[in-house]
Image (cartoon, rainbow, N blue to C red; front, side, top):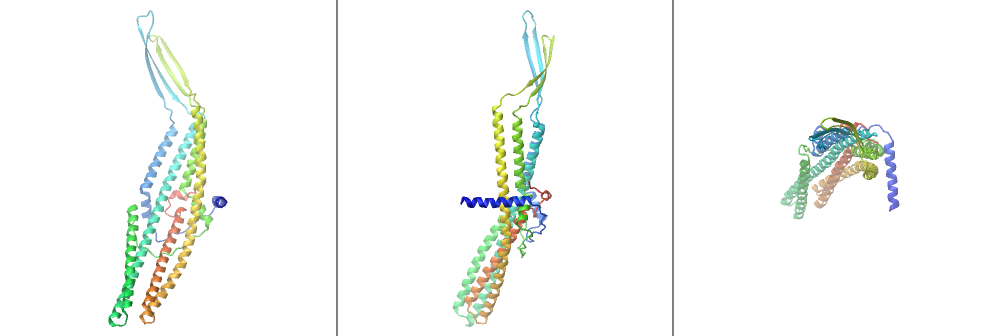
Length: 426
């Protein structure tokens, strides 16, 4: 088992390396036409609460960046007053002093703080894109869930209407004495099963549409259209490359990794503490003495600073491991997306052929029954088999289109923003 995991990890690492090292032209492909309108989706994603939260955190990161640029050291004004009793002098000497002090970042700390702040903003900006992308994933799943439920309900309604016609025909024949009572019972049973299945499908449709509207109330739900799946051009390597080159989650982790490395360097520099410089003035001895001087204060505690250095370097190591794990996971997801799109398209093609064949057989069986050449039970069985094949083919079609859309979405060829046009690998 351990050998298998090691071998699988080796293969995956090879795929990741090949994907990130190779350079390909952008893949140009139109998404499936059964998706909701682009302008509607963009408006929904831009105003989704998850995206708005990420944008608020981006503004927080910008404020933190500005704070790091300014630094934590501020000028301090100190005022002091005292009364001095002098032996032999009946007067009290009322004395006072004032000083201005400020700490200074030395040894390149200010530059590191600016870089840390910029990386924080970069991470937050990518988190906005990732929130939009994850929201798009949620919309995609709910949308195709609703389409599948609606398509199945429509097919079951058609099946019920057809069996109602069959039952009506059998009833007329029975009244004329041209059909046995058994055939009417068979027609009633098939019709009852069809109506039960339609009722269940209607419940699933209502639940799926309600789930979609609850999460995206402004998204209009359209009736499913028959859009045949078309596998996008390019192979696995191209799609893994596209996924990793435009992935907000990966770039956010990379920004966090670089920020942690900078923070570790900053902590190392902090072992040489920042000095505090001051200028002071004192008025003493009945204002007969004036003192002007300069002060320097330097912290001398080192234990906490050494511990902070170790903590920051350990955190950088953790982010490095997270970056590698994220890259491997995203590469694996891209491979799975491609396999689902490829196999889903071929599965639909085969099921479509099967549905066409069984539908022709059912139609021939119905005509043979009408001519008295085939028992009703066999005609109903043929119709049931054709219906099952039609449902399987329709659901496979929608599954394939969803897999293709997911492949495009994760590679940022669907519902992308202008920022997604820039490569995000590294």
